[in-house]
Image (cartoon, rainbow, N blue to C red; front, side, top):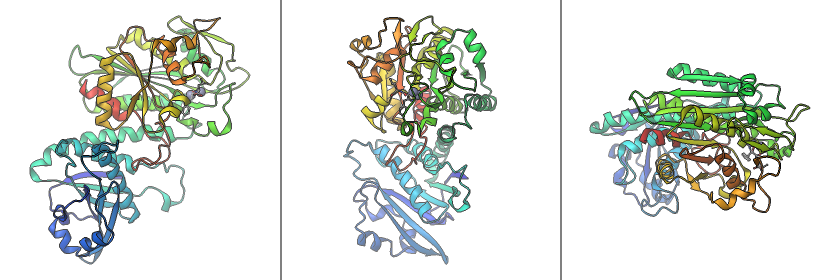
Length: 501
Ligand code: BES
Ligand code: ZN
Ligand code: ZN
């Protein structure tokens, strides 16, 4: 179990096993409470001997005896506050929190008090409290459902944020908000990490039902026969090789205010991507349970937004299917007709994400006429190769949504980098036998941009952005608050975006 609470007691009066500070480079020893220095007299000597100056993510753990019980003082460095080396101070703060959670667990401890201080005058304490809360949730998460050795399962962690009396109330409030967001990200990660045979499209629909019930959201789930009848030829084609029915999941949250704008989030929900008849090589398939990360992100974001009383209406749509080869599977050369009447030639059944999104985007535009629409998809290996695991690709031709997304990205920590969508890429997906083709021409390559162009055929005039999370959704290395497995990429971003809309 993970808990996080706020305390106004003096550091040492909190009965915990670890006492922690996140410190900037060349910090003064005065930032550490006198009573700690007194009870742990070896602390300053240890800092000196280990030459601990607070460089980025450096950590020092000093054990001491407190009332005859072993305790620890843990310091984690932030580096220089002003120079950022391309990583912002708040992102370094998040990573320091991740590092702290690791250090506490390395001591075998389950409780820590952290003195909450803003790392920069530019960052309010409320914001820092919220980030510390979200990030400690993230750092605690560990997919241990199938680990049978009790010693290797996640241990409890209780975090106490220590603040002045005058800040208690607001910090408390932001800790509550942060906990809602952190739990939503971890819920998405848990679904992503669940083995693909235990999280099929029908299972995902059941998870969405639970979310809807808990938050009193509107929910509609269309099943395969309805999807075929409605003319959603893309989703139906992808599902043809699978024994399990596909689904289109739609969740609706209504803001209290009348006439509030409506945001539509659409997420790719391929619960396993084998590539279909255009079968992937074995090693490319290993992590393809992650291919529903977009769907998880939009469902978990609306879950958090409902709890946060979001001021705008939200619709979350997740087309979900398996992509498998079989005697009934869609074949390269097949042509499909989508919900909006357009047709596409399928040259490669592994470019399936755009086929299911095409129907979902057309449906969203027709049924909801949203003020803005954002899709999230583990769409292309090309995007992952271009940006690696640290930035999701942003594709849009609308400046307003770009601006809002980039702001939400900076604040939330879900990093974005814009990739081009110029008209020159349009020709890459022409077909001689249908309106468009589901793979790009090899001369133009730029697979992430041509995929975005495919999607653009289904959004009409709607203000729209596409986020390719193929690189960021799973197995992100070197970030202390993630572990191997799902990251929940996009949840923090969508929540921040909608709350500020
Ligand atoms: N789900 C994959 C993309 C992917 C790759 C996600 C790596 C996460 C990590 C997608 O369906 C796919 O297979 N795309 C193909 C498209 C190609 C056939 C045009 C790709 O990127 O290779
Ligand atoms: Zn694929
Ligand atoms: Zn895929």
